[in-house]
Image 1 (spheres, rainbow, N blue to C red):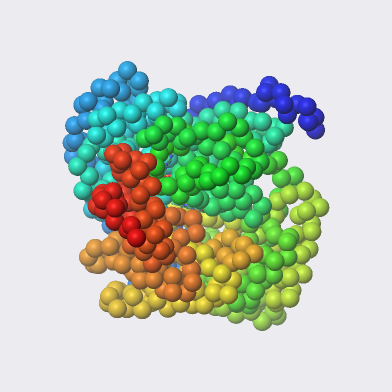
Image 2: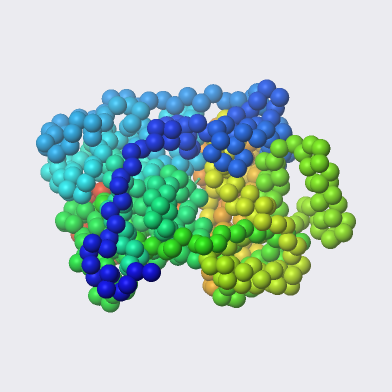
Length: 609
Ligand SMILES: Cc1cc2nc3c(=O)[nH]c(=O)nc-3n(C[C@H](O)[C@H](O)[C@H](O)COP(=O)(O)OP(=O)(O)OC[C@H]3O[C@@H](n4cnc5c(N)ncnc54)[C@H](O)[C@@H]3O)c2cc1C
């Protein structure tokens, strides 16, 4: 145990040695995730996830396509596949003065203008963006991509952009699902994507005060692995943790799956350094809490690349949990599961992660299993018999809770006992740690399914919200009903796919996360149609008392609703802040409703009472 005195000695800090990138971790330039991993349809109709990274990798799944087709009431055939044909962008706009002024600052390999790099810089992972990438074309992409290696280089890039009239878009991992990286088609200036991925080091770890300074372009998987070597975690684990970055988490106001134990990103970040058009925001010390008037660093959470570039942040560290265990509980229906979650949230003994899957997601998980043979077949038949005949559950109604417990042995034991007692109260049946672990880890493999179903003529995407406890059950019912209504109103083929889960719990409410999709073969403008339906469903969510977003953010796909959730004065503050802090609109991605038009109106005094 370190002594208190040590905390005052700067040399108590550890400076981890930086590790070279592992070439086996190359990313797929035209889809989700690692290059070696994708869902493929085999000639026998089975689906397999290639590679060996995930708990479902290498397993033949005989039921997946059939099950998904059943959900859509349209056949998905293994050999009926749309051709993916990404279109590379045409020549970039000239930015000779900008590039010349950077030539003394950046090495030649820190500037890219090739079409592939520019194309990747021009999108995140919004369903609409990927659909266009696969089957149409991305309308506008950055004219160049720069790869700064330190804070001073970022300062030089922002200065050069101001001087030469270039629009900058900061780029972390490119995993956002709000079209936040999409280049505005009406932007007349050259656009430069500032890719932060070479600023990926942990600068120091302070084991005494439990903090670390990390460069903003570091990806979650690297942060996790390097902190683990020193016995720590920062505890932030969004489902995109493998590929998203610290800077992206801050700029999108992200939330991790273990937030119950470690907090959301704003709870974990203690300090940050940000390059803005007015200079660098930085702070003289890192302390547990301060009362210093309005803390401008807080404005950067959720700023979506519109105010500056985060170059590093100081985060809290937690000791790696001594014990990690999983659990799963089956409930007779979604309502019972939600009632269980409510009791857990108020009990004060909340596991690191608690998720409630609706019935469709339970069956989705089953469809990702291999064919049961031999003993496994007998076991699964027995389990089904016990579930239905002995315990009286209905397979078409039950809901499942997965749990991740982390902490000391005593903490975990207490939480497990608490959950077991509360589960009984709501008719829950323990379904074992293996199912809990499988369910929790499945999320990382499932992220690759979107690319498979797109190839098999399905348009689909996820969306999320947060609601008070009193609205949870109603929200699920209304979202599903509205999705069906909008699908029917457009005469789309078959049935919509709509399923949801509760992913995070608070004392005051929950975060709900949905997948929605439809069969898109022959549907003109499928991506735009999806967006229309999602907007209608979002209106339903707002009518139900839900939020515009719990963690994905606004980007360019939800800005139309800002006027419904903020007062005119609040929106005026936002626009005027932007105009005052970035008068040349260097950070011109046009997220958060900050279009060039809106900013011009704000600059002319619009909104003043
Ligand atoms: C499969 C999948 C699962 C996901 N799961 C979750 C989840 O569990 N929780 C969650 O919160 N989100 C989740 N997301 C959404 C996404 O991963 C987050 O929004 C994430 O925080 C984005 O980080 P990024 O580094 O990829 O940022 P990017 O996508 O590169 O950028 C997002 C925004 O941040 C800005 N930005 C990026 N870096 C900086 C910087 N250094 N300085 C200033 N601005 C910057 C960009 O300009 C852009 O506006 C998921 C997405 C996918 C595809």
